[in-house]
Every structure is written in structure tokens, then in C-alpha cells.
Length: 150
Image (cartoon, rainbow, N blue to C red; front, top):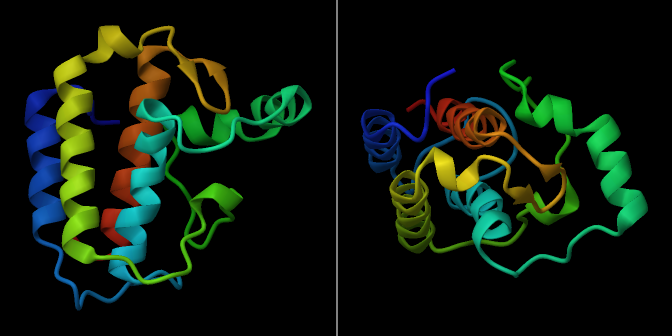
């Protein structure tokens, strides 16, 4: 798994994002490219903003038990997998705005560095190691950028 905290990897991911066009069609799935960018932004909104309702104790326990390992391990996501309700984007989004936001989140993540994230509490899974944060960030982006052929 590539390290999203490495400046070279962040640059590579940003270059992939910049190759996207508003007319890009997915190789699988139902999201449009603007929806995909907004969907990817949710991960960073949960890490940096107080925009999404935190799960209650029971829900968080269930997420840690049944979802966490799939999200933070280094196994790539399967195509057409289920997603959490907060990540479902059904309305049209502004492509350029969502792209700009995603790049800004990536730059912020890279600038803060892995030590900032090591042991930091996640929105849904409790404390994560820097490797778990990396896997969650990188593999989600890689999955969806591959979905759109970049």
C-alpha cells in the first residue's frame, strides 16, 4: 500500500485527480464523477470537520467489529461494494468545487503528516494507527480513481 503521507504519493494522487474530466464515465458503479469526488471528500470531512453525526456507542461498536478491518486493512476494495449512508451522494455536485476540496484535503493531510494521525480518534472506528489511517485514505482514493480510469 502506498503511503499517502509521503509527498511524492500525495502528488501522484493529485495528478490522477487532475486528469479527471467532468464528462468522465465510471468503469463500474452508478456514481457520476462529481458524486465520486464528493463521496471521497466525506472521509476527510469526518477527519477534519464536525459535519457528520457521530455514531452512538452501540453503532460504533458494531462498526469496529464488522467494518473497521475492511476499511483499514491493505486489501483493495471490491467493486460495487456497499457504503455507509453518510457516503451516499445522490444529487449533482459541482465538479470543480469537489475536486478543489479533495485536493485541499490531501494537501492538509500530507502537511499534517502521519505523526498527527497516529493514535488519533476516527469518526467511526476509535483510535487508529498511522498505518490504518493511511490505508483508509489511500485505498479509498485509489479505488475510486481507478473506477474512473485515472
